[in-house]
Figure 1 (cartoon, rainbow, N blue to C red):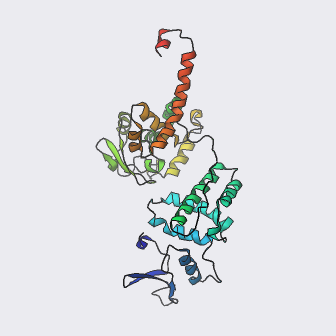
Figure 2 (cartoon, one colour):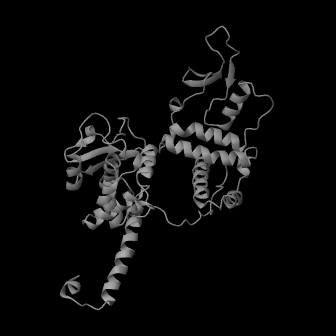
Figure 3 (cartoon, one colour):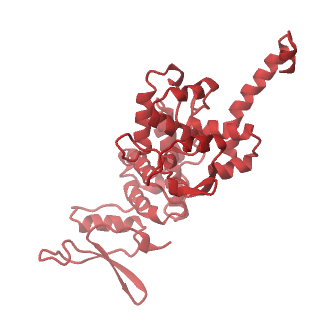
Length: 346
């Protein structure tokens, strides 16, 4: 774990002497108004470091170093050093749920936190199951990090189960896929790219002509950091043949500015407002649809996993919905009297 990768706050500087690192806080360093040089603890990953920094910055009074607030401060600081890097969007979401923990437990001793407390907090969020589950996911990450680093003696999420959620990102139906052609030009183009590339929105909006590698698109996924190679299937090749080639991403706003994932989602919602077939779809459902289409084309689950940069378990989960539906249709056909040779062949 490299401390050099940690972004130190303003006023904190590192000194290396005799192969050892020392940290100091000094406000206004190098200016006529510089303050006193205050020694800080030597481990910026520890809660004590951040408590001492707060005191050096002028916070009055004694601050405990064994509180949930101190633990969260240390965890957030350690993000750049984690084996699995957190994207900016993930960090933003984590901070939202960590703030709930701060508000509820901030001044409590972190080694006294137990699963019963986490489950009780889940109960207060039960009206919005997805919100409760996101909170639980963040607490799992915090608990795992604190346990591995010796800050707590036992997990405070063990045995706590997420809420069951209804719906989710379902694959698009045949009629919904046909309705893509009712979307206006730029949005239609983006939705087609979602479907035929099978990637997350955060990656779709970044794909550019310079990412094309032979007959595929080479990409490093923003969320996972996985390198994927997405084949340009004939349907996608036919689409791209009509697109203007210019530097930057494949899809842009009409103004010429690049899209963000959220920005494209807003424009998609506006464009589909008068298209009844698309009233209940989600853009992420196209990722599920892509997995099913590739499976139906004869690809094996490991192959789809490599293309999409997605776990095989998730691929199987996505395809299970289509399998249930196909099995139901097969039963219906089998139990329906066959009236014509065409129906019998079907």
